[in-house]
Image (cartoon, rainbow, N blue to C red):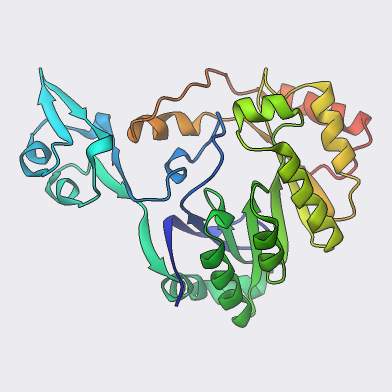
Length: 298
């Protein structure tokens, strides 16, 4: 039985593929998107989260932690995240739930026990299971085992992926995946390395593979003001939309949900960009329509 590390399971999702779905969030990602909305998914290991606004400075965590992660200095709770081993003692001692551990090791059976609770809803709505992350294919064996087990249960399957993965892994999971939610973030190689990391060419090669395999794809395009809201990038989106595999193009306006999450795990959130207003989003979509991108989602 295959094991993996997840950081969340959400039931009754309606934005991660068709119908009503259960989305499983796998931990670990090889990329470093500046606007990442799930920064807690970056590391594959279990990690500590500290919500400063919940802390009452009682000192219980400082007293019990064997690694000296927590220190109260001048009425301030200082957290050295790098020392944490994930033992969980501080979480148990905290009276106000200011501390938590992100991530846990589970088996495919553990996941499917939860997923199958809503099988009737999947059948009625055309839904199923979606693997997200992080990058699901950062744990390729676990992802493949989950998809196989879901297919044995006759579930619709979907993967949300950055496309930055080994070609062999993508090919393996494609046999058991009904739909790919494929991110397309930047079309300039230099900017891609700066804001996302990894080679853009590898991602485009994997999208081409899905096209050859005739696997349905929804192209998901986050748009960040001042970074990729440009004519050349919109043209690149329009050019990819003509691929036979691409069923739809989804424009995803940037939001700042990742900022607070980053602080909670001791990471600095460097992207100081305000979200776009609805009128700007409409303008982006109208530009894409002018470029003959005919598969835009509402």
